Length: 167
Image (cartoon, rainbow, N blue to C red; front, top):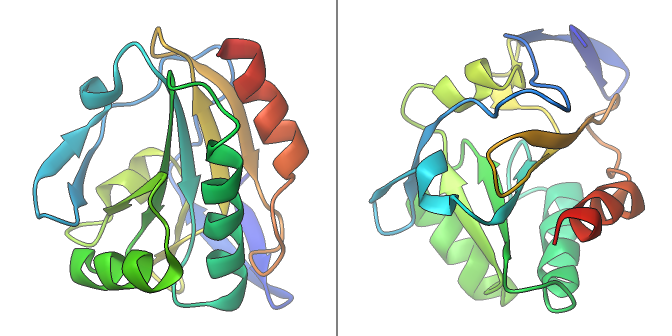
């Protein structure tokens, strides 16, 4: 997908999204403690990469809270990570205020390299599009979803079904 919409306006995406069957591209993101996290930190786990424009917006807030709630029903072999361009300090503040403990937040604030590598950087806004990538324990993408309208929620059921098949 090369474009999505944001409030009906066309937004162009940088890069190419990985698709099912491909090896997941490596990444380096920043955790709330300012440590670097990469794909290898989740090796052997089912990794759910949820990208959102900003945790401080209503749909993103709702989505990450929903995944936090869903995480309780999933195997301990599953890790859910919410990626945004929010600063790590803002992510930590938001998680504390929202009571989110089962979803880890990681930031792509430095250079948007995750957004470019995963093909979800909104060129016009320099934020991440709403998407979900499910990566199997072997590092292969098992599922990908780019939400066509950024202000809409993703298909939770489809993403969670992909996770359950792997866990």
